[in-house]
Image 1 (cartoon, rainbow, N blue to C red):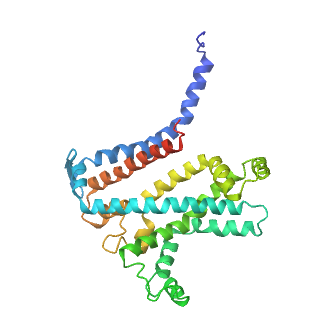
Image 2 (image 1 turned 60 degrees about the vertical axis):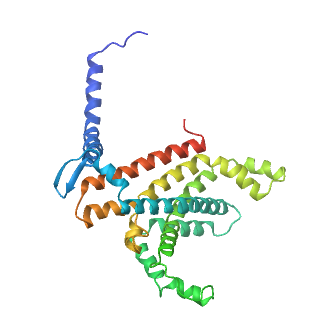
Image 3 (image 1 turned 135 degrees about the vertical axis):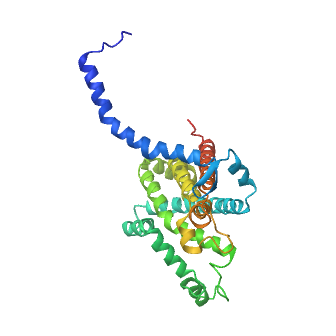
Length: 296
């Protein structure tokens, strides 16, 4: 293959091309690449506040012996393992139901379910804290319909505090994931369902044998984004339970915040904990690609 001749015009166009992208490249390097490299270097520093020195792998060794880190890690995984599957399945069922052309008020129902995800994180967290307080709306309602005989300590019991956080996250993000499934469902050829109807397939059979397999790429996407979001869980825990009671709901992100701004500042160790989240996200994303079978 003949090599392309370099003409003055080609050189001029190359220079102009690099001139156009150079600003973007500088900004990406300044605000994306530099912070990553800086935080990686920071994770090797030990000390308090701005008085730090190189500590090698000291922060990594400290992780294994830090009971509060292990508690935060356990809590984060509990939220991840319980909440993400519930939310994904709920979003799938709602999207399938709201995709029915014969359903009345579909637009209103879709909007109502989607609205929570555009609500302010702090505003809805404060509202949930009020609703799930000992004398709040939820306990009053459950007592009124005789489901419980005594108020549930939603925010002061370790188990119920986790349940409250899971309910709050599920309420806010189910509609967000449902929108992706609705968009994907409307791209599935209706003739596939018509053929299944002719074969006498039930609604459940069509859901599990047609809908879910056809939505597999979207399910993978929403699962990965939900996993990342749950591993970075902070706002709800900070505003509803403040990590309590007795650190029963503290997460890795909140622990990083405490290390940086609440306890005596230890930015090096906080950076190390943040890289634990990066590592977990990377491992779980690869695992999810493998499970779905679309690693290529």
